[in-house]
Length: 182
Image (cartoon, rainbow, N blue to C red):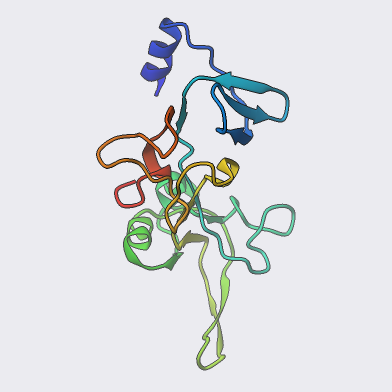
């Protein structure tokens, strides 16, 4: 990405680091809205990736009482290299390819989990130091507000073997439009 950034700067690109709240693709040039400014553009590349789905239960959130990023994560691949998790018991919640990938990379600090069997209602304790959610992803497309065609999962639909969306001049690439290979 550093090479891509340097190349774009060499060609005069102005790079802004902002969070986009909404867009207006109804007229050209397009408008991109952030908290502090409106950016006008003749073309747009949507490359916002995906966000990991989370489970909601007591202690799973952020802040003083939550273990998010302090033992609970959605990316064992990202966080698994932390020395604190080496040779420690961990848990991955999920199934399929995501869970298998996550399970092969250990990670962070927790104390344990209480697990409830949904059939028998039996509660048991698991002594683990890390927990990873591997229950899938959702594309970061909410800010588009339906202005481009999305599939049933919310991924941007592109013309086969291209990055062209349903709006001329708006393109999509990466995880936000590719749920199969990501």
